[in-house]
Structure formats: C-alpha cells, structure tokens
Image 1 (cartoon, rainbow, N blue to C red):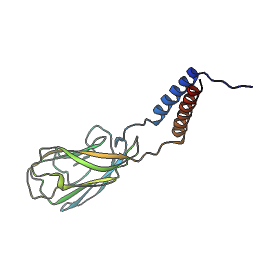
Image 2: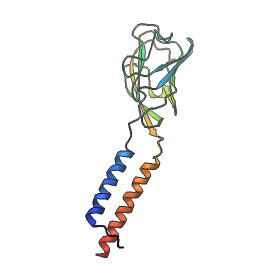
Image 3: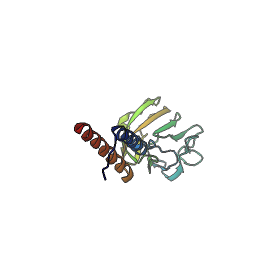
Image 4: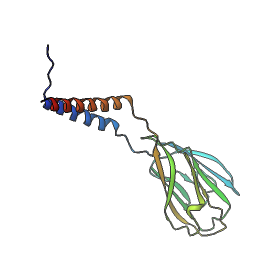
Length: 187
C-alpha cells in the first residue's frame, strides 16, 4: 500500500497550518483596562492605598476616592498603557504618588520603561518618575506651585509563553514544508 501526496495538497496543508499558527499566536495587546490598580500618596498628606478597576472612561482617582486629590479638577486617569496626571496650581507638598499592581490583561506584560509624552507641568521632568515591573512612582515634591497635566506612556515587554497548541501548529507547518521540499527534489 503506497501513500502518495500531491504537491498541491502539501502546499494547501502548509498554508492552512501557517494561517492557523498565526491566528493562534496572535493575542490581544497588553492593557490595564479591566485591571485593579492601587494609588498611594506618601509625604505630607499620606493616603492609604486606594484600589480601583481601570475602566477606560472617567478618571480612576479623584478627590472623591483619594484624599490628597482634594481640589476639584485634580485627578489621575489610567489608560490602556498610559497615566494622565492632572494637578492644579498650589500643589507643592512633598509627595510621592505610586500607582501599583499594574497587572496587564490581554497579553501578559511588565513595565520596562516609560516616556513623558507631554507635560504642561513646568517642573515635572522624566527624572522625577521611576518604575518597577508593576508600578510607577511620580515625585511631585518640588516646592513648585504651578499645576498642569502630564501624560506618561508606559513601555511594556511581553511575558507571554507560547501555548503548546501553537507550537504544535508551527511544527506541523515546518514538517509540511520539509515534506514538500523533499518531494520536489525527488521529482
């Protein structure tokens, strides 16, 4: 009993396996939307940690749920991979604002850096911001009295591990490619 496979069948199988592997390997981009994050103030106005779910809409942290943000219009808004800090004039108390428990949903990721994308807070520089793999800390204790808004973009790195099913599809595609090449050499 002979087993024969045509080149067109192998090509079709290879194309299907490659497509399936790419679909299975693709995953959602990392996002903080839906994650529960914590904000803590330390300094002159210590505030107990306040944990809220990032909703992608209204600001997560305001004076209503985090005491040091007690002036109307001050807020911290968490986006998919960004943090917006809005401070008003007169905010000059030595403070560290730490946003922690940054557990990205979608594709698993960790914070590996940040960029101060824009800032109308004249005294805020990138040197006043630090990070760990799951937190970012902003030092607003400069003695300056001018406020404004700053956008901090988080730089992430994927920590996702390919699923065994995806690896099996890639292996199948490589086997099909090898068989097709062997077949074309023998003809």
